[in-house]
Amino acid sequence: MILILGGTSEARALAAALVERGEEVLSCLAGRVSDPALPAGPVRIGGFGGVHGLTAFLRDRRVRAVVDATHPFAARISANAAIASADSGVPLLRLVRPSWRDRADAHTWTWVAMTAEVLDAAPCARRPFLTTGRQSLQAFLPWSDRSVLARVVDPPNFRVPTAWRIVRSRGPYVHASEYGLMDDHRVDLLVTKDSGGSHTAAKLTAAAELGIPVVVIARPGEASARPGPGGFVSVEEVLVALETSRLPQVLSWSGRRGLNHGGSSGRLR
Ligand code: NAP
Image 1 (cartoon, helix red, strand yellow):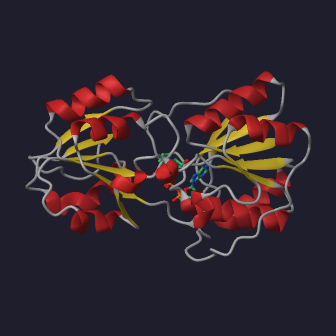
Image 2 (cartoon, protein in one colour):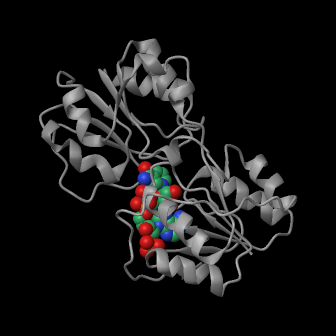
């Protein structure tokens, strides 16, 4: 069985391709989103109970290979996967979306290391557009007096300031709607993570055309910024590696800090 750690469009594309080829595959989702876009094939929702739980899962279910196709900002599960792969001997492949750092306009943006730094990086913004996701929204509460436009999949789980406008939607997004949304709201700052790839990149082009400054939160670690060993930037490359059995040796991982050794169990759908 091939285990896909998912929650991204690339993970869904990979699952669809593997199912199409008749591979035994299991996609795993964290369960953060109330109505997730489900991949083809069997799906398991919920954590593994930290690195030990994931290691046991890989061994018990006789997993042939694990593909970490999680979002570049999902650092904990990626760290857990690297250790569980090393401990269980199950090869790990990492599907890493290309960073936006390589775009021609990347040098025009303000880069910050973490969400909290956005506030200092753009003290004068009055109408910021936040596209950093629900989990990071609370960090922007010091901007409760500003006309924040925040885009999320699920509604925030805290009381939103009255000056804020929440729009609920799920990508991919196209240029015309991104341009229209930012123009209509008279956005004066775009805040984004370096999610990378093409599905949510239209906002960057639209912001440039509208003359809107951009603050980008950098990826949490080098492992998520560049593919590295066992890393691939496209679904096609992962498929080739799986097909030719040229599976990489398990990765070493130096970022053991902050790992989750807690206990929880997922559920199959
Ligand atoms: P995280 O901080 O890296 O992971 C926290 C815990 O959630 C993990 O330790 C694991 O629990 C569980 N988990 C995470 N991804 C899982 C998966 N695919 N399958 C099973 N369990 C998983 O993750 P996060 O940043 O909260 O993101 C959660 C999921 O949302 C990820 O799978 C990611 O692909 C997706 N996502 C994240 C972002 C983002 O900006 N962070 C954006 C879009 C999509 P246990 O330790 O109990 O195993």
